[in-house]
Image 1 (tube, rainbow, N blue to C red):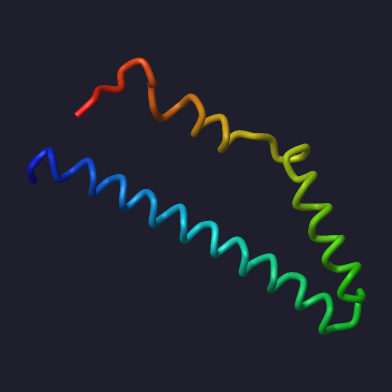
Image 2: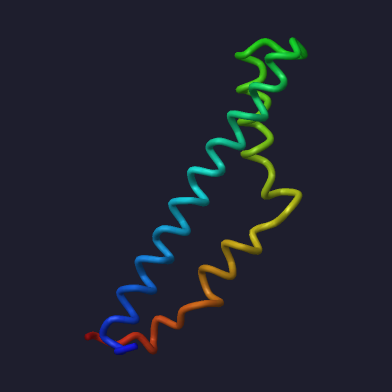
Length: 83
């Protein structure tokens, strides 16, 4: 494969993967809230607050390992070149 075609293709594939991950997270959050509401464990307002709270504080328990990897472990900005 030609190098001039490989980089745009790689960027497009990474973009599609990130979009899929974002949409998948939205559906997972909605499904977890729907389960709690449909079984009447919590009212819808409380279920949304519960999910938002735990999604917000999750970094305290699980850390920022993925963000650190993306921020400094994959791309070296000093070695970037113009095409």
